Structures are given as C-alpha cells and as structure tokens.
Amino acid sequence: MQKISLPTRQPLLTRTGWSAFFIALITVCAVAPVLNLWVPESSPFHMSTYMVALLGKIMCYAICALAMDLIWGYTGILSLGHGLFFALGGYSMGMYLMRQIGRDGNYKSDLPDFMVFLDWKELPWHWTFSDSFVATLFLIVLVPGLVALVFGYFAFRSRIKGVYFSIITQAMTFAAMLLFFRNETGFGGNNGFTDFKRILDIPIATPSMRMVLFVTTGLTLLGFFLFARWLVGSKFGRVLQAIRDAETRVMFSGYNPLGYKLTIWVISAVMCGVAGALYVPQVGIINPGEMSPANSIEIAIWAAVGGRATLIGPIVGAFLVNGAKSWLTVAYPEFWLYFLGMLFILVTLFLPDGVIGLFRKLRKGLKR
Image (tube, rainbow, N blue to C red):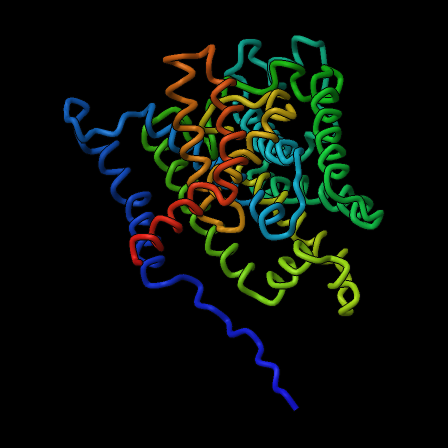
C-alpha cells in the first residue's frame, strides 16, 4: 500500500526573509525617527515631515494591498469594494478625533462644527462611544468586521463567484458612499471629518506625535505581514488555496468552503479597517470619497502590480504605484490616470505574476 506523505510545514520566514524583516523593523523604529527628529533640517540626511506623512500613508495602503492578497491571491475572491472597509475604520477613528476637538472648534461647542452648522442639538446614537479611545479601538475592528460578516455570509452562502461577486462588492461600496454623502446620517456629508486637534489629549500636529503614528503604522504592517505568512502556511491557508484552484473538489473532499471564505473575508476587511484608522490621523481628513469604486480598484491594482499570492508583492506594489502617483500628480497631473490604466494593462499582459514574479524569473535565470 502506497504511503501518502503530507506536506511539511515551512518556516515562517527564510534566513534571508528574517534579515529583511529586521532591517525593515530597525528602519521603522530607529532610523526614520533619528533622521526626522534629530538630524538637522539643513542636513541632506534629514527626513522631512512631508516624507514621514507620505510614507505613513503608503504603509496604510500597503496593509490594504496585503489584505487584498489574502482574499484574491490566496482564495481567488476579487473584491472591488474593500475601500468601504478602509473608510469604515477611518470614520470610526475620525469620530473620536472630532470629539477630541472639544470646544476648540469654530463654534466653541461640545458638538462637532458641522453638527452646529446643521442645527443639531445633540449627538446621534451612533456617536455614543466616540469619546472613548478604548471603545474606538473596538469599533475600528467590529464595524468593518460585522459589515463584512453579514455581506459575506449571504454572498458566499448564495455561491456568488467571479465577476458577479466583484460587481456586487463595487455596488456595495458605491451605495455606502452615497449614504455617507447625506448630511442627515451624521458623518459630515461630502466634507467628512477634518481639522483634527488632538489624539489622547496630545496635539496631533507635533513632529513627535507624527513619528509615533508613523512607527505604529510600520509595526502594524510588519505584524500583519507575519500574521499573513503564518496564516497561509497553516492548514487553513492550504484549504484556502485549494478553494482558489478547485472549489468543487474541496467540497467533494468533505470541506465546506463557506466557513473558510467567510473567515478570510472578515479578516481581510478588519485589516483594511485598521489601515483606515491609522490613515486618518496622518492625512488629517476622511470623507465619503474614500469609498469611491476607483479607490477599491486601485487596491486590486497594487496587488496585481506587485504580484498576487506572494504577500510581499502587494506591499511592493503599493509602494511603487503610490510613489509614482505622488510624483506624477505633481509633475504631470493630467497623465496620472492614463499611466495607471496603462500600467494595469501591461502587468496583465506581460507580468501576470507581477514585479515579484519578474524578479524571481530573473534570479532563476542568473543562477543558471
């Protein structure tokens, strides 16, 4: 009788991978703070406040790209609505930051300025816990997670797949965007939330607080990366990849894909919500535009450009695309969207495995 050998569990990271991880950790926690806070502005090695904010924002995007890779690259579920979960996490943090303004607003009221302008007399019910930082941390996880759980349960139970699922997720985020544009919902209408003053009663615009947010974002990205590596290397991750490759065979093998797909869908949504919460205090604004279908499509582009089912690829893709965007929108603003479309077409036609896939092919060619 032939013996069947089960796959051995791979290490979380290779020796080279751990070296790169610790280099990134030291860069985030030590090098960047020193270059920004202690190196004089006259020095060519000084890291400007603009660069701190830009890299912090891109790291938030990288978390979203990593979340997209878990569901698209490893499970075969293409979502075009992940911008919704990003925005829900951002709004949860934004509500807390608006309450932190206190009476420092233009109207010197305990209510946010936009509520005073609209003649609101009291906070709506969904602002009940917005003055508590601990409650806000729970809401950042619970709100995107619950929305994803409800939507995903009905979608996956109905066995909606492929392009139909992608279209429905895009319709979901578009409907949410239209809802948040309405003033009566209590989310600031088309202006959203801005003019933040403090976080934990500490001024938010100081260099030290900006660096704290930067380091927190970097540590969160690295932590999520290790978590994703562990997840895809586990039995759970192998089942996800089997669902991606042949869902019908997985069902015949005795596994119910619903629980697996729903779990990774909720995890991915929560990761985007955390990214949105870190994004808002660094950028200084959150509005319904973050829910636009175009933003969700961009998340998929970052994953595709970097390389799906690689984990590191989407992170690289987020940095490459958004780095190019920050330069092109200043130098050639009218050509940015054409560049983005051309990039996606070229990657689809010539780099199906993304930048990381190209790098691996070149490395194999050099070894030969």
